[in-house]
Image 1 (cartoon, each protein chain N blue to C red):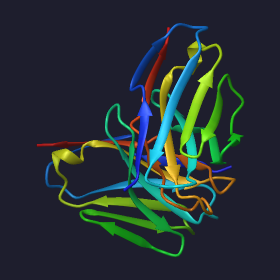
Image 2 (image 1 turned 90 degrees about the horizontal axis):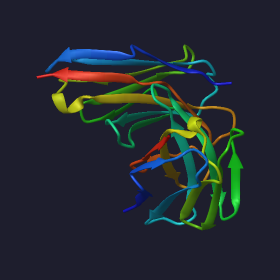
Image 3 (image 1 turned 120 degrees about the horizontal axis):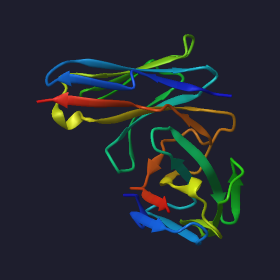
Length: 114
Length: 112
C-alpha cells in the first residue's frame, strides 16, 4: 500500500532563516506531487505541483521554491522566511495520469515564523 | 476561476442525528468533486470522490451527491457519532486539471 511521509511535524523558525520541508511517497511510482499551504481559518492554497523529476509548476508567486530530486521526493524550501510564511504545509500525491484521481495527503508541518 | 463555498462554517449536533453538509462551486465544468476530513493539526483524509458521470457515492454512513447543473454537492452523514467530529472540506477542480480549489470547510462537532 502507498504511504506518504512528511517532516518535521512542527517547526519554529526566525524571520530571515532558511526552510526545508521534505516529503516522500512509498509504494507507488511516478506520482503527481503537490505542496499546499493552509493558513489559519482559510482554505488550502496550492503552492507547487510536479508531474516528474525536475518538472515543477508554481501556482502562486512567493518566497518559496520546490524541488523534486528523486521520483518520490518533494522538497519545499525558502532562502529567507517571512512572517507571512507561517501556516500549515501539506504534501500530497495522486496517481500520475489526467489529474482526475484522488488526492492523498501527508500529516502536515505546522510552521511558525517568529 | 473556480470558487468553492461551504455552509455552514460550523455545526454542532447531538449524537445520533443525521446531518447534511453543503458545498457549492461556481464553475460547473468539473470532472469530479472530492470530500475530505481534517482532524485538528492533521492532514486531510480523502472520504469520497464523485466523478462527473455519477450522482452519488457512498461509503459506510457517508453519502455524497453531486449536481453539476446547480453547482452543488452535499455530504450526508447518517447516525452521527462523536468520532465524526472534524472539519469537512470539499474540493473542485479549477483551471488546470491538477489544481483543486478547496472550500474553507465545515467544522462539525457531534456531542455525546
